Image (cartoon, rainbow, N blue to C red; front, side, top):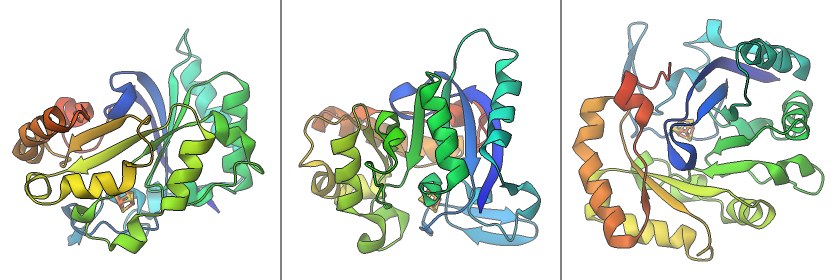
Length: 252
Ligand code: SF4
C-alpha cells in the first residue's frame, strides 16, 4: 500500500540542489525512529523523534495519509502543478522513507514515468534499503540524497547504517551524494569518525553536512559549528533554506 502524505511546489532547501524549484511528493512511513531528533506537541501529546513527524506517525495524522492505488493519480497531481509552469522543475520524492516503496508497482511506475519524460528526480533516503537496480533499472537515472543517519539520531548503528545499500546506490547512479545532519555535540566528539566510516570507500561522492534543526532557533545553535567542521574537512555546508525562510519543516 502506497501512502502519500503531502505534495507541494517549493524550492529545495537542502543538499546539492538547494534553491532549485521542485515539486515534492512526501510518502508516509519509515523504518527508523530517530528518537533524538525532536520533540513535538501533537494533538495533546508530546511525541519524540523525526523531523517530518507527520510522515511517520500515521496514527496521529491519519487524515493526511492518502492511499495511492495507481501511479496515474500521482501523474495527475504532477500535471496540475505543471499547468502553471512553463519549465520542468525538479521532482523530489521524500518521506518518511520513500524507498519502503521501492518495489511498489505504483511508486516504481511513477519513477519510470518521470525519468522517461526527462525530469530530474531526487529520492531523499536514509539509505538503509537495498535497491535491485537490475530489476528496477529506472532507479539508475535517479539522484539519491543519501541522508545516512549518524548516532545523534538515536537509533542503533546496525539499524541506521546499511553499507550494502549505500554501495549499490553509489555504484549504480551517477550523481548521488551524501547528506549528514550534524549537531555541535556530535561535532565535538565523534562526527568525523562516523562520517569516515561511511564515506571512506567513495572519495568521488560529494558530502554535504547540514545543521540539526527544523526551527530557526535550533538551527542557529549548530550552524556555525557545522560550517567550521566543513572548512576543516573539505565537506560542503548545506543550510536548511526552507527552515531559514519559513521555519519548521513546511517548505511553502
Ligand atoms: S530516517 Fe528520516 S523520516 Fe525516518 S524517522 Fe529518521 S528523520 Fe524521520
